[in-house]
Length: 192
Image (cartoon, rainbow, N blue to C red; front, side, top):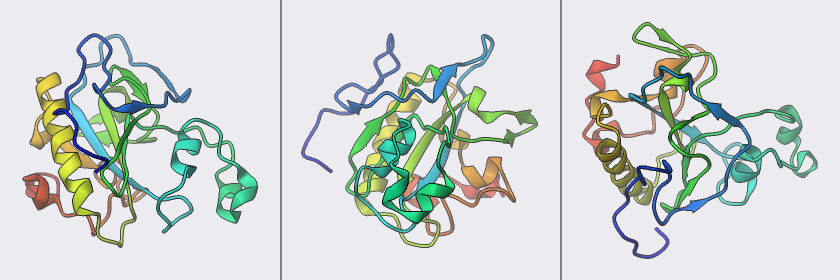
């Protein structure tokens, strides 16, 4: 983590994490009027694939990814995606949009018979891959972030935390087999 900070909390009026760096993404829109935030979707991302650090995830989520820097970037040029929050390998948090807005993170998705999970979920990206273990600092930061979200949104709970692979099976695999759900005290039996 990047030094001590106050306990995380969500500012009720803004939907932003207090004391966390924000880089607002244009890849967002309002949630549907009747939508209630009651699901958290965990993702894994690395750019270029398998590499950590650098500005590329932030650039992707803000629509500024330089396509000439790496051959893979040509394949995702023009992609309009975002998440509410990124947890970097060292536990640093970066917020891309308020939790009350719809992030474009889950794509074609469904959970418990409800389509379009972006409408009612919070998207959290973890810097990592399906195959490599996530860092201790990420688990510590994620646990603190989840506690802040549970406190700010009464319908959220450990039972309402899923992986991208759960809401888009067959299409997505993240956060992958390397993600240790037990470190968050989340029972995966309810999702399988």
